[in-house]
Length: 368
Image (cartoon, rainbow, N blue to C red; front, side, top):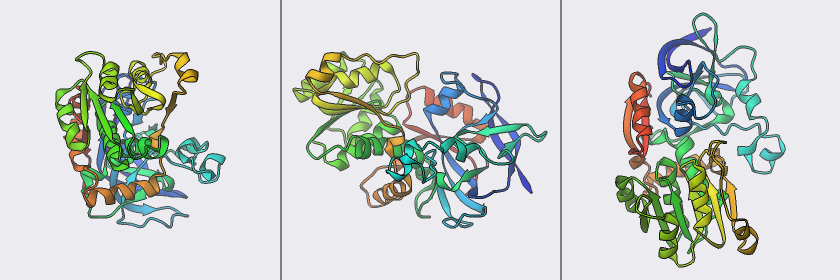
């Protein structure tokens, strides 16, 4: 058996998404078939659409989504038909060295989980395979997902809000709480106030940071930053943000978080550290953009720079916790969604995302 669905397909890169009818397979072992209700638009999707990062068309993009379980395959016991679930691209095998030592975001078998099966998950009506990004492919009415790329969430969470938990929130929160382990009383700077950056700002507030400096070039985002927990803001268009951070803190920050995905801003994150500080890069920096740092600061001042993939998350625990924090008022997740579209207007949604004016754009794909 198989089902025909509508999906937004990237057939050429760079190029627009095209709404097409695809055929989705039934769930096999360890797989779950999900109806997609809402899907967040991520800059990593945009970078495949505009050709910044290499892609392999035809492909259905989208990896952060919320929906309901339709059916499950053999070996699936933690999900049942009707469950509300969130997708996360941090699928993990649970048995490799990284998984068993608590670093599931570095799972060496993720590609196998996403791709290994006897038949393709998605095909065009003529039989040509279509790759679902990260083994998810959320810009479609249904997604066929490995059970280790899903987590159940309470039914009372707003679906729009739940759709950004699987990437933006998990990445920003996890970078602060897991990758960097920000402590009470420390100082924090966040460069780039999108969905990931604002999640990092809120995580720093939860961690008890004494100063939280939000940095961006969009005045409207700087205005919102204080409502999310920033104690200070810096307009990066109005002079040197590194100098501004040093003026606010005296010696620089304990932690700087880069959420732009630029070699230049990663270098700024390192430069605005105090001695012994740590810069954490959350954004996807193209290979063509080098990160320039002063070598002497590495050994004379013991500064560090590190990457954080998907917030070093443990999403099956983290996402329900963040949903709970939102429910009791500790996180402002509803306000992260500032623009909306549907499957038919998803290219307009990506134009809004590319403008830099929005925090997170969410597409309504189907019904819960």
